[in-house]
Image (cartoon, rainbow, N blue to C red; front, side, top):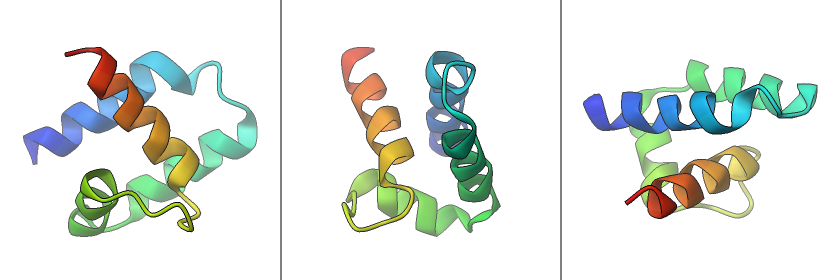
Length: 66
């Protein structure tokens, strides 16, 4: 999915290098998930999700880049 590639690229470009190691690991784990799950989290964030810190950064960056 092009949208998913864009979203993951946003995190890599804007946040990955400066992220603490545990957040980098979380992002790598997120990449292992199925695309529909990731898209669901991006479209309807779940604060209880272990991936929420990464998803929040992606969403915030996508919103400010508009």
